[in-house]
Amino acid sequence: MSGTEVTRRPGRHSLVVSGVAGATAAAMALAGSGAGAAVAALGTAALLAGVRRANHRVVDAGGLVAFLGVALAALSDAPAAAVLFGTVGAVVAWDAGTNAVSLGRQLGAEADTVRAENLHAMAGAVVGLVTAVFGLVLFEVGPTRQPVTTLFVLLIAATFLVVALNR
Image 1 (cartoon, rainbow, N blue to C red):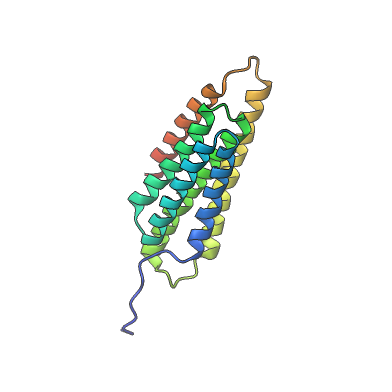
Image 2: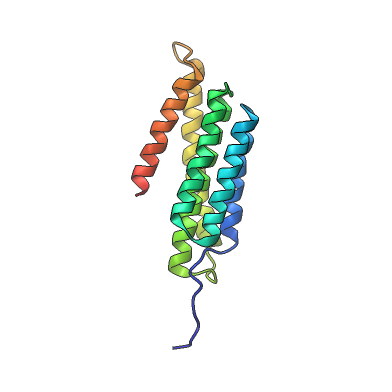
């Protein structure tokens, strides 16, 4: 044995990936309300603290608060596109954060996980963006114009589905 101890935490790159996605959620929430943006930013900060401490529960709570910030913006009559892309940002931040914590616990902070984290985040972002664009197109060209709250309820259902599938 070499005597080298592995630090069971995510690397610094994990904070960047989750932070960019969380900042996107907060910026999209700003289109609806300053309060929603502040809540999303607070959730992102908590999420990043959870990633730094390698704590899944804090990452989950931060991701939920970031999503609630986007929900608050949706209830403040934010544009549908901002709600959709803000939700994608919150979900990608949460997903990237939980992935980073898992990788950090398995491989340690010293391992080079940049490629794996980037691919995971990009795959999640692509799936989220394709789904958001599809939902936005259906929302805009559908037979009747539904209120943004209808879109919001669908987003909550989709978020619960993502959480259920991830566990």
